[in-house]
Length: 345
Image (cartoon, rainbow, N blue to C red):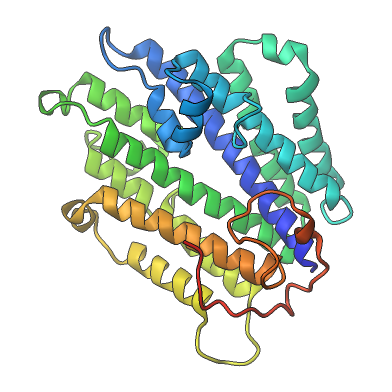
């Protein structure tokens, strides 16, 4: 496979996953804003922290409120990670490799793109309906991909992008609730506290599966354990890390045994840490700090994947996440070999 093709497949799925996550976050926050007791803090500003774009939002919308948050996350041209921009970037990557992806995949991402760009009736709908349609469009793209794409390197790189983005967004939304939204001590366990935890689970598409797994009351420890350490739920961090490890073994399978390189070491150590730890230990040592470390590991993992498979040595910053001319270099993924002594910060 050419490196430019692998790069496009990886980013198509990262962008679609990002758009789907943001649509769910905003949709749940819309519902939560209606249910919040009078005088409680609205759930809008934490969404900006969950997206990791606080500085950009403050620059574009100084002192912005609920409407500006929704505009920033859904349609803002100045936000590269807005839903509309994510779908546009995914579609552009797909357009460049139409001979590799299936016709059904192209039609789905192209239809979703033109719906967001030109459909006046779409934007005339209530916000909840807009977000629900976006989310379903993204999920339909996943289903079409899994139903029509051969389980070769194309599918492996598609899954890899989706899993890394999913693990990142799960940790971000959990960190925002656990670190920034904990109510005052007298409110812990109250109506607002439980409402926020239910909303968090719904933001991750995890509420029903959590209730089947945990029959007791909703507690911060139980929610954190489910979203971080559950081995069966497809959006938990542990599940994503296990599938990332499996995918990289298929993509980079060695014919000659040897010492593991930086990429193999990082993914193996990260998986081991999150497979053989208990939630009590994570909380005792600082859950916020553990999540910060995990997000750094995911960033470094992305940088190492990018350096090994997507670009020639020294030609592109591994932190780039957009289409660039260098990414079009015709380099065989299976033949690429780089010195990975330095990981990106």
